Amino acid sequence: MKLKKIITLSLTAAMLLTATACGNAAGIAAEETQMPSDSADQLSPKDSVVIAIGSEPETLDPTQGWGHGNSPIVQSTLVKYNSGLAFENDLATNYSLSSDGLTWTFTIRDDAFFTDGERVRASDVAFTLETAKAAQGSVDLTYMESATARDDTTVVVTLVRPTSIFLNTLASVGIVPEHAYSPDYGRNPVGSGPYKFVEWKSQEQILFTANEDYYGGAPSIKNVTVVFMSEDAALAAVQAGKVDVAYSTATLGKTDIAGYHVEAITSADNRGFTLPVLPAEGKTTESGAPIGNNVTCHLEIRQAIACAIDREQVADMVLNGFGRPAYSENDGMPWNNPEVRIETDPEYAQRLLTDAGWTDTDGDGILEKDGLKAEFTCIYPSGDSVRQAVAMAAAEQVKKIGIRINVEGVSWDEIMQRMFSEAVMMGWGSAIPNETYYLYRSDGALMDDFYNPEGYGSDVTDGYLNAAMEALTAEEANANWQKVQWDGSTGTAMQGECPWVWIVNLDHVTYVRDGLSIGDQPIHGHGHGLPLIQNLQEWKWIG
Image 1 (tube, rainbow, N blue to C red):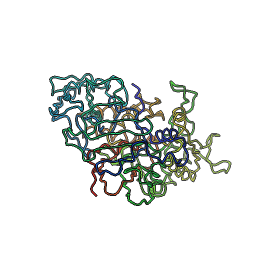
Image 2: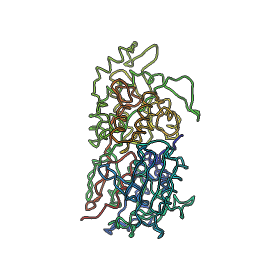
Image 3: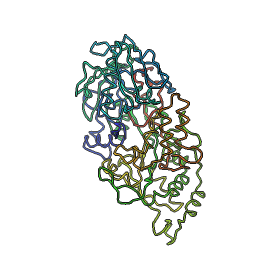
């Protein structure tokens, strides 16, 4: 199955749409710094907040991807994460798994109601999961055979095969009401979560209000306005005192603004090069995009780049300290293999290249082999200052070992055509292990969903991926996720097959008005905006 593109794929994609809608994609236009209609008067009350983020969702329908990787705020979920990434019950009061790993039985609470007054029943849970499976969107339930309601408070989910990530998936699938579900649900949702949907003005704002009947207790913040702004416009709005919270970037986060403080929220959001591992042989994807790169297909080129980059320096200089070195897609997680960490060693990188026959035959500083220059292009989404800065800093360091990387900003539409044959400054990162599976499975390579454009595939890796997915315990799953990265002799790690050169993990830089607490933020996944509001019911004014 080919998964659709995740809705929170890129801050910059949404930023560009927003900037275009405001009539000026470059600089801070006067009209960009104006708040959308009806929002300015919501700044004063201490039961309200205005939040500026870069990414506008495509939908508020969880079966179509709303809340993917996070907790939706309009809908409830069966289980949820706490700030330590442990599971807690939400709608579910308890659950059990059969000994063969195929049958999950959930008991749900009997005091949960949708905001139209109807009680949440097990049939709504079953309907939600079956609808999400049929949608084949960013919620992958292809491994689910069926979901059925045994009675009003019991739902039974049968899987085709044991799947260790099932609870991770459920933690971000909000339950929708079967009786009130329609084709326009994503623009006018009804749920049982801590907040109620009020209004959505495309490319401007979404309004929410507290669900006073929420079974978890009514939130302290009663009125929420989420506005969509480019990074420069959001900073200008903070400087003008027009928003209470604004996502910013590492390149802008050192600006001191009276009445605000910066919170650097730890994230698994990373940046690095995807490097095509296949040679260019005239092949194309189903959509006609060219496949392969005759420089990056050489393992020694990929590994040399990985060893030549000083990640600490990039994090300190380019990210202003709002980040850390990255060595994998899941640094610091329980399923991460600590052996993926490598040292910066340009001398070793140079030896790798020399031993493989790369030499500077014409003295221009670029190595050659069999008449082929060690030179290629890395593309990034135009307007994303962080990706641009990281790519240029890395390219400057790699130039010292005789590899030239030409950095070029292009549109996301162009990236979708060129990502199978050129390097991309890509971003991923998730607080759940599902992502490793999608990034490296062979049958997901060269699709249009951004997961594996480099064309990586390995029977060994697939074996570990499948074993991790089908494990019946977290310990067994984690052991196999770690072997995906490095089993002592091969793997996806940079000392292995190196389809990625990971560079930095970003902090999510956020301006917060003094006196507002945004709670104990969970580790953020990729997506500069939506992860911030997943604990919105914990926010409150304290001064």
